Amino acid sequence: MNHLLRSHAPISDAGWGLLDGEARAHLSSALAARKLVDFAGPGGWDQSATNLGRTSPLAETPCEGVSGLRRQVLPLVELRADFELRRAELRDADRGASDADLGALDKAAHQIAVAENIAVFHGWDGAIIGIGEASPHEHLQLGGVDEYPRQVAGAVERLLSSGITGPYGLALGREQYRRVVETAEHGGYPLLDHLRKILDGQIIWAPGVNGALVLSLRGGDFVFESGQDLSIGYDSHDGEVVRLYFEESFSFHVATPEAAVALEP
Amino acid sequence: MGFDQYHEPPDELPTATRTFARLCASLTEEAEAIGWYEQRIAVESDPEALAVMRDAQGEEFKHFSMDLEFLLRRTPPWREVAQGILFQAGDIVEHGEEAEAEAFEGEGSGAEGGYEDGSLGIGSLRGTSP
Image (cartoon, rainbow over all chains, first blue to last red; front, side, top):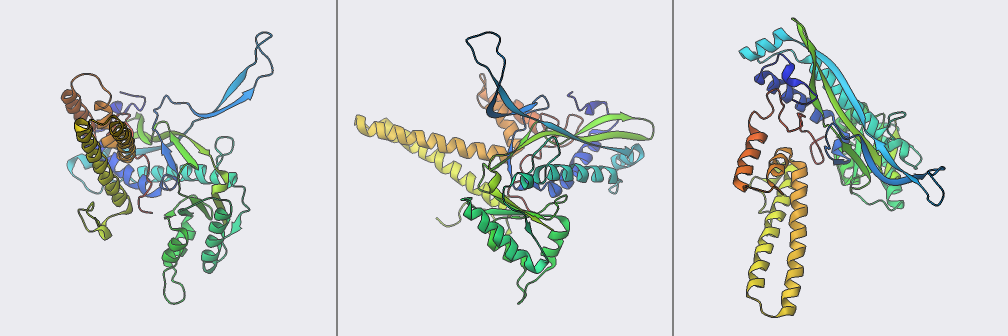
């Protein structure tokens, strides 16, 4: 048994299968950053830092005649989203009920996915520098939906001008994604297809993103390093409910800040 | 040539599956090339030709290994099985049976979770649908 303490939970093997499957389905649709940036790991729960290969000087040395440097590392951060499920619902699922109420799990899965998206795309104050805040390019304005092709093309042109090759991906906030999917341009051509042609890459639904980001998908520019990949752990239980949580640890490093352009709503 | 790596209509396959199939095809081709060079080296007597072919075979070792690593990164259950077999001393078949049992018995269910670290095994989602 590891630190997740799953064996202590009053949940059957079939129950765990139900919870894990439900969690995977919700997380896979909402985890937008992992669809666009490089993924390294998982390195395990005991991984605490990412090597940056850099050093900082140390003013003092133990004695004369030597010099010293301190290695710089990027600490991993932990995200956790707690939720609780009614034990009666899990017992009914074991009896074969196909409509067990797992709403609290779904909500927590969405919350932790949104948190990961925000941390990667916009940053996490004091913990992670996000893609948008690292970008040296002036933020563009998305404008109305009719303006999207021009603004996205402008972002791609900026990346090309900086020597950043494609293909390019587009992370769209919920509202922006809905507008793109529902819109057809003059002549009935779907806006989604037009944007795909501009980008030569994927367009991703990214809950938590404010506006949009265009970034290169060539690889090597943005690295998400996983310690403990997303997991469900056990916290406690009583006669009525079992308290569980989603958990993960990760770092995020922007190696090429100029490989992305942020577009504000 | 054409699109032989696809067993199903390509238009019906997700982008990630098409990429996966391409790398599987590439892995197969690299393994074939390694085998061909092994045979050519076995029958060649010219030292200079041997040196050239050994160098070429070394390239195929690299290509095969890169293809394999890519596929393992994108397929957590495969990666977990491979971790139990590759670079392990001892009985290969025994390791294989153990790794398979650990990776797939009760996958996605049970208190220990579907993966070695107890995680959901989500990993990278590059190439998956929006």
